[in-house]
Length: 128
Image (cartoon, rainbow, N blue to C red; front, side):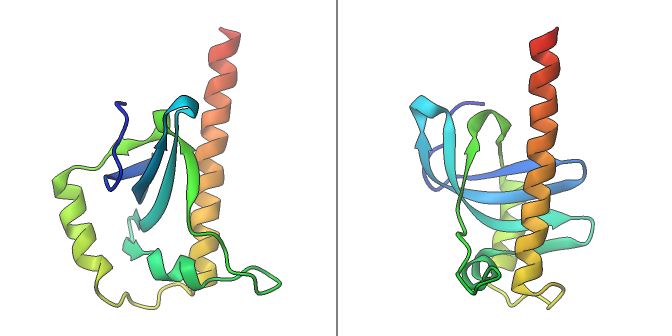
């Protein structure tokens, strides 16, 4: 993947699920992207995340950090046909499918699965 630029919408995909995010900054030497999650998209539809992640807290009521660092080689550019429906839902009040804490848990679980898949691929490529 060519390096994304600030403000660009990208996604991480794992199986039938995507986490869409905005690129805040590209850390070129480290080949990492500073990302702000926007929405979680799976077979159930689009779940906007922005305000949920900003208001969610962890066990001792500290707010969670909404941004993440992720390797650039795992990111994919979102097409206009992906982004337009996504942007249309970000401004609307989503159905209360998940509480803010549940959304954070779902995103964390997704990221752990993606990372585990990446780690396995790295190990197998290194051994062959």
